[in-house]
Length: 202
Image (cartoon, rainbow, N blue to C red; front, side):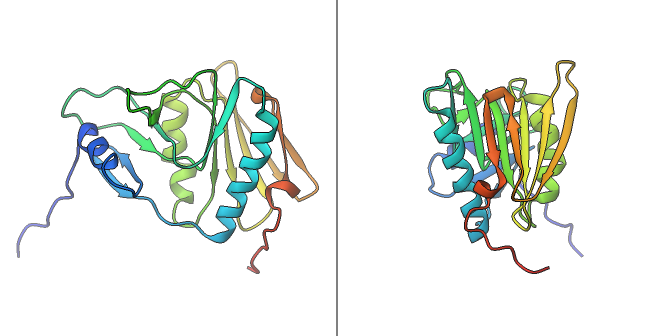
């Protein structure tokens, strides 16, 4: 019986070369390249609703919201050939305050996210809650807020960085409630977030 084939490992340079030459989106985690999954209708509606709400509230302010086509680096600057401990990902929504800090002159990788929003999916929820959030909070010093938005029920989990570096947690449930993102002076009403979303029976 032969030895099992090992999964290929890529450098960041190889990943970015591949990513910049194709139309599809891929994430990079510690040398592994993973294709991005498609989204459900509910996921798409919720993401669009949040973008509409944040975009309108941020008009004329020094912060801007971008959709899921913006890559964020969460990790150190790797030397040539290194593959460990680095994440390049596509948050569903990222808010940037001030001028965007880009990785290089390609201007497609952000280094200074202020707020990240992820709409939870069954296939990615464990990663969004676990290692992805760990990378975000450990490597993105500009990140002040992390929101996890359910697509199965009206629920938003809001993590906020405190002045001592710790994170507070608040869970908001119900269409008649709202959450405040004080760092960017925005409010998300859950009835706006879930506009035209029909929850599936469990």
